[in-house]
Length: 305
Ligand SMILES: [Ca+2]
Ligand SMILES: [Ca+2]
Ligand SMILES: [Ca+2]
Ligand SMILES: [Ca+2]
Image 1 (cartoon, protein in one colour):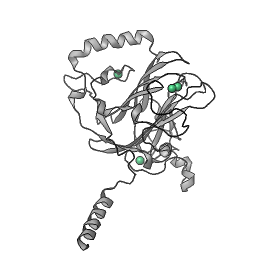
Image 2 (cartoon, helix red, strand yellow):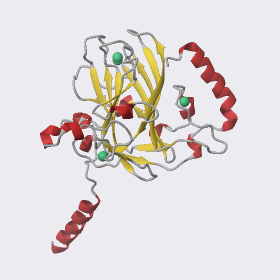
Image 3 (tube, protein in one colour):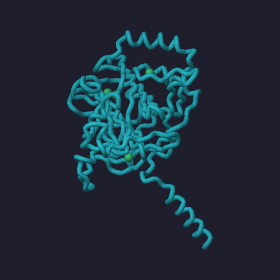
Image 4 (cartoon, protein in one colour):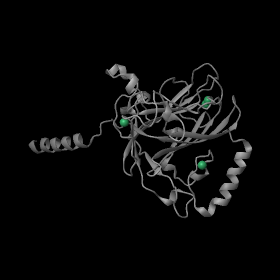
């Protein structure tokens, strides 16, 4: 008995010293961000242009699909159903650009993402340094929202129906939601109110401290996160599926973390590992001609931005 207690105590200490500050959600699967190709001999650079062919060789183990999502709000859309909402989302990163990249292909049976007062969108939360903790509604933990709202993790939302900026950042540091710090390129096949497929590529600067009071990158309290291979980042995704059109509501709130608190609390995210570069995940230069022909065809067919 004594020995069991000793072992348990040792295990307890080990667990205590390696348990990160944020809780792990969804430990039923592994989550990883792939290092994208930029200036690699023989490999085509990833390009943020709304054409997703750059990502064609990334294995499905790195995808987030509808089957990884849990509806946590309305309870009216049933189990994941690709006839209602189908997703393929891949997270990438690069050490020199110091950016997180997201590619998303989304089929929606009733698409409203480009109309006013609708909510077909991807909401993305990034806690780059895996600090965990509450990052919105911070007045409830006695922090001044004018300084701390969205500071220690950032909630990004697509706003394809906003002509001024197709990315919306929750909090005060909105200067960080425009290029070059963040941006999105996208294309839609289909019409509003009917079935459609969205193709989008977006990029994000990540922050350990993005003061809500900051007005630019010269803020003395600003801390841009340095991305490095092997780091663990807290990431959460919520896909709002609006199938009934204008009226400021949604029919489904599908989250990757299974935890509805992900939009304000970084303990409710999942742990993504930043992987090193693997050429097998990418398209070779010798495929470039065919890919460019395809890209141009898509651009001519109705590139949206
Ligand atoms: Ca692309
Ligand atoms: Ca739908
Ligand atoms: Ca953080
Ligand atoms: Ca919809």
